[in-house]
Amino acid sequence: MFEEREAIVVFPKAAREGRPWLLKTEYWDAFPDVELRLVEQGFHLAYVKNHNRWATQEECAAKARFVKHVSCVYGLNSKCVPVGMSCGGGYAVKFSGLYPELVKCMFIDAPVMNFLSIPGKYGNPVCDRIWNQEFVFAYPGIKHYQLAGWNEHPISYADSLREHAIPILMVYGEEDETVLYNENGRLLAEAMEGSGLLKEIAIPYRGHHPHGLIKDNQPIVDFILSHA
Image 1 (cartoon, rainbow, N blue to C red):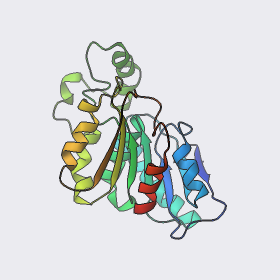
Image 2: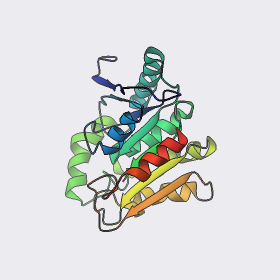
Image 3: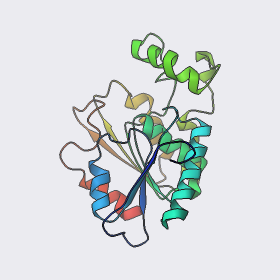
Image 4: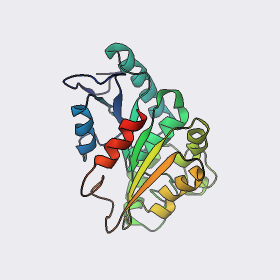
């Protein structure tokens, strides 16, 4: 338990030099192949439960305290590697933008960057349900019209990632109809354009799931190894 939140730390058989570690930002047990491969190569892996999926500043601050706690208690690197899929990608970007001093690099997959797209899109039954059942509780009093120009979208923190030169690997499915690339990931690509910090991998014929590379996740592993 960490601050009354469930938390997990996974230990490798032998820690890698520099004691690097991964922070899974949401959906702890989803598509874990990349994390498992890196644990086998000496990475630690950690997770702390969120109170919501929507990357509020309060939740990101709790993550920052958790990162400092884990680094201190277990003697790990002071900077982690956020791994985030979908809403977890939004967490990874916003957390890293707020606390760049705690981040080495990140791997994100189909990240939610823009709340105007999800869950703020009018007329979409899934978005309407998420908005009414989750989002308004994460951001009390929020209205759709306030989202334009709002500074709480994950994409609002892209300039900080660029300023602090945080390397990013972003994977997405070209057929994703849940978190549309053109309304989310593409915004991050535009923000990082010319910086040399963002590597994108587009997966043809893939929708929102499965996350990761369909055939072999080694390129993701190699990216993290080269930057962590």
